[in-house]
Length: 148
Image (cartoon, rainbow, N blue to C red; front, side, top):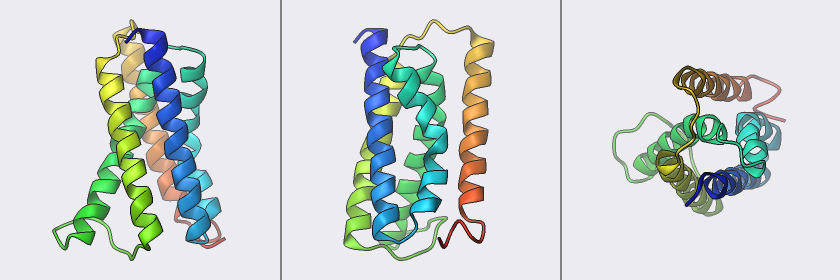
């Protein structure tokens, strides 16, 4: 797969992840929380649609974090040690599979993609998006956002 095609795949799986999280928000009555949580994923959609090699470095940190969160939900559901708590409807559980699969496909595509981006720029983009995703998750749990 060439770099332009890989970028478009990253855009597609990013968009799928965003839509799945919006549906989670709709069924759990917390759409604002999920809009905030997905803001850092949008650069990958935009850059990926433009065929930008930077889409690899904006996507990977978000995909990694979302996959870790989904794995923790699955561990919770299986009664195994986990970091999260909560209850999940059958629809939400089905959506964790879509989010996890999108994240995994994004990670595999990103790892295989040759971006040609300079190392310092790649590291900076990765760390910036990781920070933005972590901040967005934290903000999404603030009163007024978490219970819209």
